[in-house]
Image 1 (cartoon, rainbow, N blue to C red):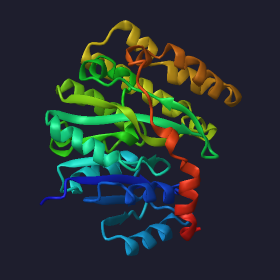
Image 2 (image 1 turned 180 degrees about the vertical axis):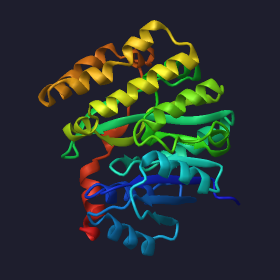
Image 3 (image 1 turned 45 degrees about the horizontal axis):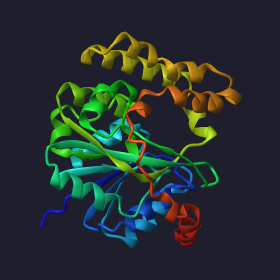
Length: 298
């Protein structure tokens, strides 16, 4: 039987969180997968850690770059290299719920027309404590209508490889916001979308996350957003709303997180959610589990 899923991760200087991301994949309830990891010329001990994992689990394949190529280029190479029908994205500082792959594969087997499937996330701070729940629209109609808002949490998505290759895969030129640009092309090609109304990952969102998303990254986001709004014929409001990222990035660093949290109440993605949805993360204690899992690599 053909292995159905490749988990695709790219990492640059991922210490200390990358070991938790890897452990969360290796401990999935669905076990028939390949794990393709691009080491983007790390210098902080990540390479040595990855080498240990290749000895531990034969499902892992490491591609070590001789220089930094960037996330977009690595993801494009990963999609091309994968030999499985489905590709699950995983970020190096996130943590997957134990049944993430099982739930997503079950859904796409029942709904074979879906090409991009994501889900909710639980935000963690730098100490690994639960901060909030991050929700996104769930139906194809809602997602496509709000594609200019980036209605997928990239680290949760399961991609139909054939469909993604047909629309041109990830852009190798984009080091940031490569997922946002891809969703516009997917929408233009009429690919079918869905998000599961439950959390699939713990998403690490800290002050440093906003610091990395500086004004240059925000300007890239706006440029992609305006281009995308044009190709999907979005409303004037969408063009204006896309600039939110740049406004936040231009604020003093002490105000960025406050502004980010305050602007959530105006996020159109929140207006189409099922208020009766109940998230299930309370029975997990992520930092306690992960500290135990990672001790052998400290």
